[in-house]
Image (cartoon, rainbow, N blue to C red; front, side, top):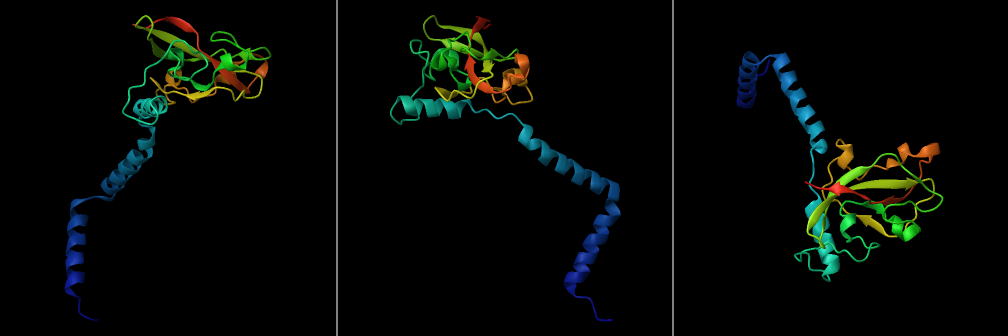
Amino acid sequence: MLGNSKFDDMFEKLSRRVASRTSRRGAIGRIGAVLAGVAITPLLPVDRRGRVSRANAAESSGGDPRAKWVPQDHDVQSCDYWRHCSIDGNICDCSGGTLTTCPPGTKLATTSWVASCYNPTDGQSYLIAYRDCCGANVSGRCPCLNTEGELPVYRPEFANDIIWCFGAEDDAMTYHCTISPIIGKAS
């Protein structure tokens, strides 16, 4: 048998010390806790409002992301129209519908997501119930991605990334566009 090196002796002492102070169950439990924590990390809420506000500010100011983006109240077909603060999809007003009605040939989904949007005209915030119009191919007109007040998918009533056509009549599961009716003043 060959003699042990100093490294081997040191590693053996360290291993024996760790083994005498810990149990297998404790080590497996700690490893499991770390793995569970790593698995849950993607589910944590992410606030993307700053990114969208900077992007909208850059568009409206000719590229300066520090400019403040302000919602407007005169062009309903624009993404910066005040009611579209949390819309993710196509504006129905561009496809033959209005802010509150679906275009002909589509059906209104029975479910919605909500957001509180600021009206610059009267200085009030209103609760908007975004509802998808379903049953026809995606309109592709006036696409918008605004995420003000959006929460992750595990809070579906505030998540605009879900296609809500699963609640439409006659199994009309194809998304077409989104309406944005006011359902009341926000408190």
